[in-house]
Image (cartoon, rainbow, N blue to C red; front, side, top):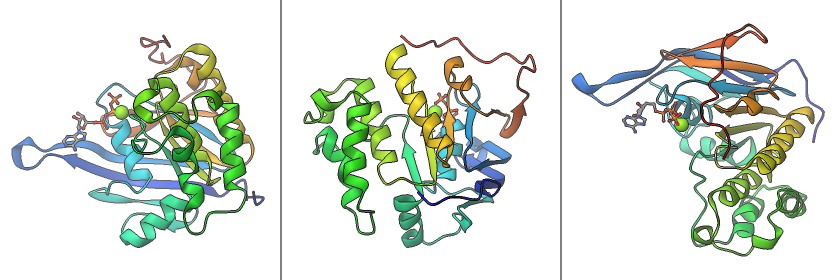
Length: 244
Ligand SMILES: Nc1ncnc2c1ncn2[C@@H]1O[C@H](COP(=O)(O)OP(=O)(O)OP(=O)(O)O)[C@@H](O)[C@H]1O
Ligand SMILES: [Mg+2]
C-alpha cells in the first residue's frame, strides 16, 4: 500500500438526503446525514433497525444515489459520477461487504474472493492476497463449495475476503459479524482493525458491543442524521442481539 496522508479523509459525506417511496407514502430515511472517515480509522455506525444504516452505506459506496448532498471517496466525487466512473471507483477504491453477502451463486467461495483480482486494473498481488485472506478467515476447507452449500457465517467471511482482495483505501461493511460466533467474529474484527491500522478507512454498521469496542469512533444514525457518540459518554449501545 502507498503511504497515505493520515489527515486527509478518505470518505467525506455531506448533508445526505434520501427518501424511499413516492407521493404520500414517501419517507425521508436520511435527512441531512454527514460523516467522514480518515485513513487509519475504524468507524462504527449504530442505530435501530430501519433507521437507514444500510441505505446510508449503499450511498457511501456509490451503489445508490442520494436525493441531495454529496459523497467523496479518496478525493473523487461519487455523487453525480457516471456509471462508468462509479464502477471504476467500486472496483479500485471501495470494498463493500453487504449485509446479505451477495456472493455469486455460480462461483465457489474462493472464486468469489478472487473475482475482483481478475478484473482489468487489479494489482498483481491480489490473487495471493485472496488466498491469504481465505486461509486467515478459516475458509480453506470450504473454499470450493458453492455459496448455497456454505453456512451464513462462511458466506459472510467470503464476502469480507472479496471486499479486501483489491486492497481498497475504503472498506464499507454492513453488519460484518452479524452471523458469526464469538471466535469468527473476533477474527473478522481483528482483520478490519488491521485494515484500518495499515492505513485504510473502515466504516462498519453494527449493533454489537464487541464491534463498537474496537472502533475509533462510534456514530449513531437517528432521525436521518448522524451524531457522534462520546467515548465513555454514558449513552447505551444496543446489545440486544449478541452473537449466537
Ligand atoms: N428500496 C426501498 N424502497 C422502499 N423503502 C425502503 C427501500 N429500502 C429501504 N427502505 C426502507 O428504508 C428504511 C431503512 O432501511 P435500511 O435497510 O437502510 O435500515 P437499516 O438501518 O439498515 O435496518 P437493519 O438494522 O434492520 O438492517 C426501512 O424502513 C426500509 O423499509
Ligand atoms: Mg441494514
